[in-house]
Amino acid sequence: MTERAKLNFYDRVLRPDPSRTVVRPFEPSYPKGFGGGTSRTQETVDLIVALDEAELARQLKGVTLSLDENHRDVDAMLLRRFDEVAGRIEGADRINAEQRRLIGAYCSEEYAYEAAALFNPSAVLHPDQSGLPEGTIRFVMSLRGIGEGHVSSVTFRTGTWTPGGELVVDDPSPTAVPPLIETCEKGGGVAVRLCCAGSRTISEIVLFPVLPSQRQGIEDMRLVRFCDDDGSIIYHGTYTAFSGAEVLSELLSSTDFRSFEMRVLTGKAAIGKGMALFPRRIAGNYAMLGRQDNKNIWLHVSDDILHWEGGAKIIAPRFPWEFVQMGNCGSPIEIAEGWLVIVHGVGTVRNYCIGACLLDKNDPSKLLARTPRPVLAPSPHERDGYVPNVVYSCGAIVQDRTMFLPYAVADSFTAFAAASIDNLLSVME
Image (cartoon, rainbow, N blue to C red; front, side, top):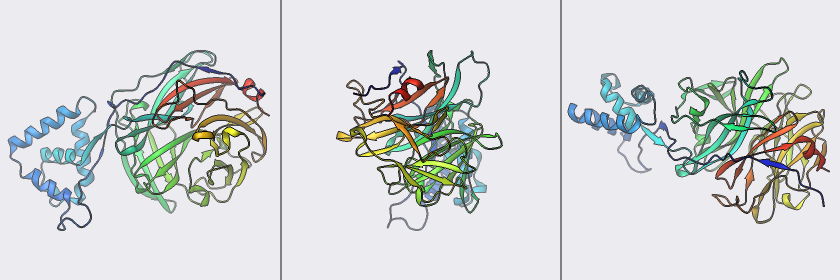
């Protein structure tokens, strides 16, 4: 029987924390068939401006006491929120500063974005690699947090890792800062710019749904450090936008993890889950892996990073642990032998396992080898959770012929492992 790859596991585990909250937009509304023409927001504003000074002061004090513990610059945040809704309020220019702050509070909600789950991690090299011991790297990791209503958001962590040595995941800031959101037209479509300049560390950034296509969540971001032909570096993240009825692939882009741009992917290949971008162009074109038929892994090539058509199946289920479905576990990783792709397979009782394959470096449509047995499978002591019998990842890092693999367990929490590239290749066939 073919041997399994050997993994080294770390003790560090990231679990969901209901105390981590972000303040996000909210507006009251009537269900269909109710209301007399005046918006609920306007009706609420009318009640607020009718308060006497003493009651207004009491309400503002309560808001401050509630939010100050977990949030920074609360007054400025509430005034910004008022400015966002002011265009829908009659006589907004006549409302004083105290009333504006309270209106901003009524049009906001505190959301525990990782109260239920913190999983499906993806890791890339941090933009700043200075001040580290030789052989150690600093990384940025995206995670999918799930909160009330099973809504998914993206949160981040940082840390350092030494191949064959220590893993340190930095403790997150107790504060989460909502991004400043700007929607604009770009290239014939809608782009959303997210400014996170108010965040002091990457761990304070939370990206929650802002577009109708994302209403139910931003899911399973696959980060990649993309190096263009001119040597410029940009971080892209492909993710699944879920409206509650339909899924769509979208793209997050950033050069510094301080400001981001969200754009919708178009074309027949973009209507699906799990797209993962190669970290550089191949023969002048962008390349992407996907699983549009929910069974096989596909390769797509395009001269436009936002538009994806056609494609071809390159990896089909072959072994029992992947009979039901295959997909990528993040962007391909370039090594000397070719493109290393971490994959997932679905087998009996809807078990999700992790494996790997190798694609040709010059022609990634050619499958060179694959693991006949899972590299990582649900273990008896780590199989229970929100979705049992699942291990899953959205992106690994290779450094000095060693792979750093953050992975999710049972759609609930995140764990970490490392593997030798030589050992991993040796168990492929």
